[in-house]
Image (cartoon, rainbow, N blue to C red; front, side, top):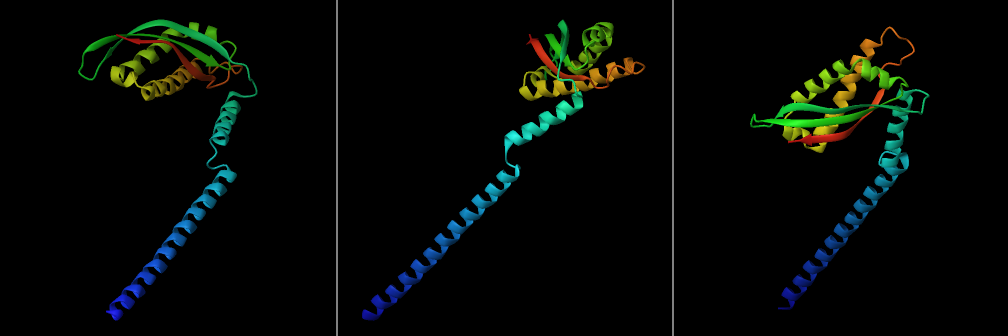
Length: 178
């Protein structure tokens, strides 16, 4: 009986040693992860403010030296769209165009038909469910900026005073689907 008690005592001592080793490994692992995160943060990889600053810097560089923006508006466009089941719906859309080009209002007025055609093509390529999501609206904005810039670049290619790709942002002012 004394031998059994002694054998159990030896086994429990080995278990304590294993537990201490496991705890030490966990502590070392936590310290390594924390050290790696601190290193990445100090290098700017994990800092969201630095990422936003770099993005804003790129946008400012694209816009050129001009910090001033100009707006033009397209109001009350009524469009036909469909939902995923093929049913037709109506959409009322108004938006403002922000640009670094001072003559953006005159340009949008002169090329209104071409810009509206771009909007109709982009809206028609989407379902109402897609347009009601935040991601769908963001994608629509990006593609409208690209397409409208293309239209205005082609229209003003002979005028060297007007910069290419001068539209920087689209702001929806009315977005109703019924």
